[in-house]
Image 1 (tube, rainbow over the protein chains, first blue to last red):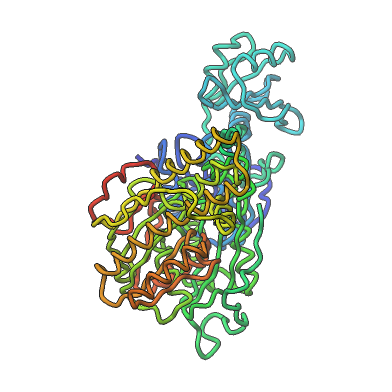
Image 2: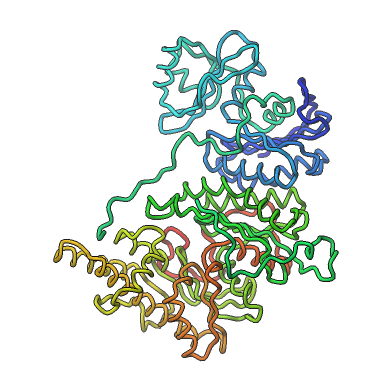
Amino acid sequence: MTRRGATDARPRGPVPRPGLATLAVETTGPACSAAVIDAQGRLVWRAEAMARGHAEALVPMVAAVMAEAGLPFDALGRVAVTRGPGSFTGARVGLAAARGLALAAGAETLAVSTLALLALAAADVMPDDGRAILAAIDARRNSVYWQRFDRGPQGLVAAGPAEEAAPGRVLTHLTDTRVAAHAVGSGAAALIATAPEHLTAGPDVTADAATLARLAAAGRLADHADTPRPLYLRPPDAKRPGRALLA
Amino acid sequence: MTDTATPADRPAAPDPEAHTPEGAGPVVPRPIVLGIETSCDETAVALVDGARRVLAHKLVSQIEDHAAYGGVVPEIAARAHIEHLDRLVKAALDDVGLALGDVDAVAATAGPGLIGGVMVGLVTAKALALAAGKPLVAVNHLEAHALSPRLTEPDLDFPYLLLLVSGGHCQILVVEGVGRYRRLGSTIDDAVGEAFDKTAKLMGLGYPGGPAVERLAAAGDPTRFDLPRPFVGDRSLNFSFSGLKSALRRQGERLLAEQGGLSDADKADLCAAFQAAVADCLADRVARALDRGPAGAALVVAGGVAANQALRARLAQVAADAGRTFQAPPLWLCTDNGAMVAWAGVERFRLGFTDPLDVPARPRWPLDEAGAPVYGSGRKGAKA
């Protein structure tokens, strides 16, 4: 079932390119979402839970939010997109759409890791209590994709690179650094169970296009934007062949 | 990865001024179609117009990315496609001074093929089509191969008999028109290009194996080893190559046991024997199909294996013996490329075949969807 909405989400910060709209797409997790914010701050969004089918659903969803917002594509100043980690295919679908839309519309792409989006979304709704924010996404195979973000006067800062790890490895990191953090994302529960002394459950945030569009339009992704390439954190499954039988 | 230069034997790109949009010139050869191909290990983009001119042609081959694995690794292929595709689209347009707004349609391979790569190309095409306000044409990769000879041969009319041979496919079809295919026969196991690749892998000849086997075969004695000719003389028009491959392995293992190793000459002779057996199989099946297909129809061979000169010559002979015309696309059009997708887009767009933005990417997509499946086609992949 598609959820949809339209609200006034006038950005609190300066708009990076005034007069232009911001489109956002998100397909790295178990949902597909698209959202657009026009120059007046009006947000239109659609979201649908799905394990697969992003390649079919996403572009019509973009068409729907643009039509409802009454925006032509040349009104877009930027296309924001999550680059993973998460579903490899999902990350490619979102990035292929974002890069294609940006190319055709003459807009710029604004790509951000799904972990950074989760952390930014959490920081947005939670006062700074001195604790870090630990974003974690369930990576299956008893591991998580995770990254720690610290809060400071300049806002949210990544404390280290994103990585894939077993929960025990995250516990070691927290023990070694003596950091207390709020955990958010689909991998949070597993980490909290492993490291209850260091972690508390943060706000229930999800990486979705509406949040992404809102943060992008407010200029709050700038410090976390990266090249519009997938962030996999895991090498492709491929085995090198042994010696040829008749070589 | 390797960016290849423009193929030398394709039609020269015309003066971009002649393509000023909105009919500035006296004759604008509409439609102009952007074609995208990402179904295997080539990221390819082309612009083709209604006058059969390839205005721009861009291709990044992933051969080096897959070579260490001895074959195409789907996840590695998908990762490479997303890296290059939008850059190639921009470069193709910039080459001829066109904007996306100047094209009439955006065409992309929607299957069959490696699904992760197909999705990258198809979603990119959907995004371009939506934002530029252009229709989308979802192209069947097999149809792109099937129609590719008409890009370079304006006189090639329907119907024609098509032998479609590639790393993923081996079938004989009657091409009755755009979107109208009747399959006469297909492989019941391996695709012919796959058999070439496996033969190369067996002997450690590197990847891609087809050209390597062809090179060695040219220096070998095709009569030294006796290999089977599966289905030769059979009333069906089907193919089988897995037994041939096993027979080749047994011959090689026998040599290995006797001599302790294989010399270069041994390998060349094995390759020559293998290629001769494949040629006999293809020739027998195609000769039979020419008898059964539409009277007087031309024989066309397309797909990556059509780049093999020995097989091409043999099939030309089969056509000549049957008093038929023989057509094979130029080599650059046999292997996967964007021009054939753009051309299939031109042909389909002219007939009003466009697709909605939710059209699915399909790992399997037979050309003759209404036809009964060939037995054995339940194997993984889209080989038949």
